Length: 254
Image 1 (cartoon, rainbow, N blue to C red):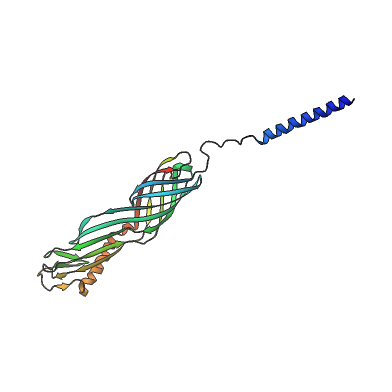
Image 2 (image 1 turned 180 degrees about the vertical axis):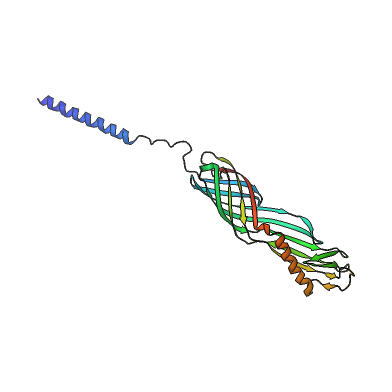
């Protein structure tokens, strides 16, 4: 009887030990592996070429359907042109910075991106001249540039320093299932109507006789026509208040 009692206790101990090992094995089992491509994406950078210039963007994804990105662009061009007999040698400087929210209703392949151009340094500056003896017009009045003191000066066209914008396109800056990315943007910046300023110096004369010359910088008649010419240029270029954006970006997600 004593041996049977000891045998029963031994069996109980073995059973308890086996159960403990079984429970330990269940609690220490490795977690299930997440499905491929379902991990939360991180940070990405990209090179971008657009109608706003050449630049870089960086972005971060908050979920599969929402990203935040920001970037800057720059470009310089030196056009020359003639308007109303006045010759301009221009300097077009594109300088801007943007902040956008990418809304991705269909995940990575399409995005709608409202945002702001938080800095708009886009502007056109130019030097102006009218060769001596040639006629030109300001507003609705014609003049002749004095051969001994020809018309010269400068001009500048600027826009609001900050402006709302909206873009849409295919692809995304921060992809979920790969590292390299390609995307495009199409949209518009609502930068407001241009503001033009003209400053003229030299001497302007009667267009027929070449006489009765006056100082262009101080004569009230010429200055009133300069104001009219500024208004004309603003009206002729007011379509620029809707600045079109076309962009291609190539990036890498870390």
